[in-house]
Length: 592
Ligand SMILES: Nc1ncnc2c1ncn2[C@@H]1O[C@H](COP(=O)(O)OP(=O)(O)OP(=O)(O)O)[C@@H](O)[C@H]1O
Ligand SMILES: [Mg+2]
Image (cartoon, rainbow, N blue to C red; front, side, top):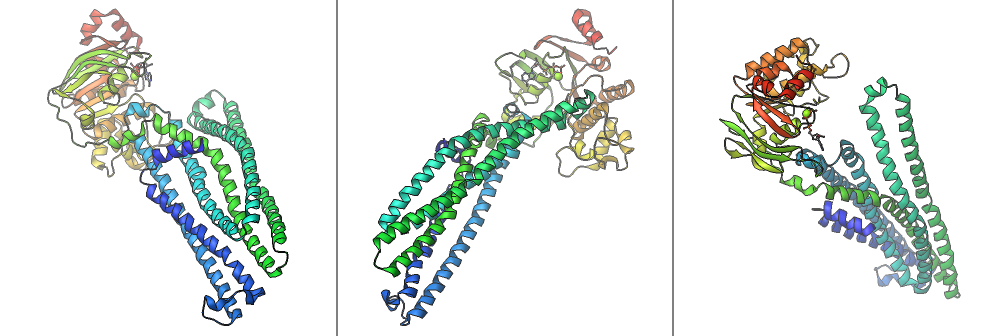
């Protein structure tokens, strides 16, 4: 489970990180070797102090006096420790930087994907899922898994080197002790592994429910109040929070246990080694003391490393599921595709007509939403698309915009087929007013200019005037620079719609595509908007998914849709006289 997910993660997200990972492994080995030296030098140091005659220091360094030699050796050990610690601190600094950069790279890649990938692909996951991946999952994976795996390697290297020293110096007692401690570590890991694995699955689920509950409460505050359901929603939040807290406490508890087990193991190891060493060195006290010293030093180097290994293993076990999830996300989204996206800023030439030829579309296998759509829009047309709710009007608009790729059929602009490579430039000539209007938490001007680094103030004012919204906006103290917030500067639905029209007009598009929300405009504003559209039609091609009689009557061509098919195309009068249900539809829309 661990290796499989780790391998997949490195394969999916590790491109460009391999050399650095190898570098860190080498640095871990160097850190381990420095630990090895630090402990190894303790033996001669103690021997020189308690039994100077045993070591002829002059053989190694040209000093006759063993006391001075011992002092120098001590100083050497001190310097080695200072160097070793400085090296490890530097290594940890590099490691934090590496991990932070890697995390950011993954987060950037996800945001890039969510922004650039084909719309239909990004529809595969909900906004909540996306927020979870970017806000929580990637952080958990990097901090609780990748960083811990790296720590694991470093500490294993340190322990391995120190153990190696013990094995060289005292093969039998070291071997017996390693066997004992190793067995104990494996056993306790077995005990913890199954528990932390289950815990992590539960934690994962509860984390998601918790986040869903927060989002749901924040996003639906109005309906919650209207339904007086604060209690129910608050209670749900409390429950999800309690559930999460419960597993978090358990998880934290498991994390606090290992150091105490390690301490017991270290003391047992010490006693075991001491016992075997005293059996081996019964006659030589000074060697015994020096051997004890090195064993104590070694075990006390090993203990913190073993602690870190234990907590790393716990953390890795409990986050394997997150890694699995982030790997699944990668595979589900067909993630690498985002690299192929190119944004084309050129405007497409549009001189004569747009043709839909045999367009079919379905969101999924269950139902075909658009069936063999064929029609032509001439430049300068004011086309109305009308049909019952669910007829496929908004879907048709999305297909025209290239957000949803047709399953079959083609769209031509002046005989040029629209495809992935020219859709972006086609969108440059379209101003789109969606059915569902989104407002950014920014100034009105930024909402009109949308995504432009430096907006043109004159153009913003002009667009707002055209959309019949400027008078309302200029009443605000800061005019177009005021933020659209709930409260005094809040916008009504009709004003939001006009803001969306201003947004569409800002880029001075050749084609205006409106997906009208019904009944948001009062009669006066509706007339003003219709007048505006009538004025605009002299210079623009307008496609309106229309509900209002005034709009419908102004259209020179109406496309009547039913159940994903075009029933007929004609003028308002033609359709009214030919289709009883069209007449009913107009009547039922309550617009006359
Ligand atoms: N994301 C989606 N996934 C699956 N099916 C969808 C999705 N969006 C819409 N549909 C289905 O496609 C059909 C057409 O929907 P569409 O939004 O195009 O209708 P519409 O004509 O715009 O309706 P309305 O007048 O209510 O806006 C509906 O049956 C709807 O259930
Ligand atoms: Mg719609």
